[in-house]
Image 1 (cartoon, rainbow, N blue to C red):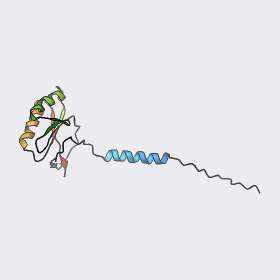
Image 2: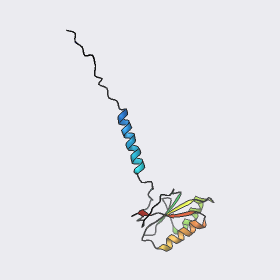
Image 3: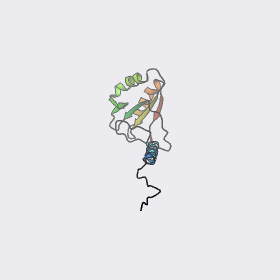
Image 4: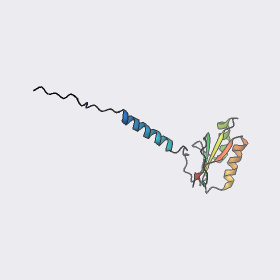
Length: 129
């Protein structure tokens, strides 16, 4: 009796559908992740109704104990103007201020004035409600 099955079952497994799912998950997580890069020093940002995402060319961070950093590099208060001048170098750039909500406004105004004096656009980083 030479009975043989006419349809043979292929035991191989195709990984193409699995890779499609992995790539879709990767794209989903990349798009839903936060686009704002955190600053080097821990800062409790103030809240606002709207929080626009801005391209951060230069970031200035001030913590509640008045530690300053420019682009994640810790500097003294008197070195901020020279750091901003060297980073902007005559071009009209974007400066984003990450200032703790407990810091007095005079420090925000001082750094904003320095950046505006260098003809930079100044933005204040906030977190949405």
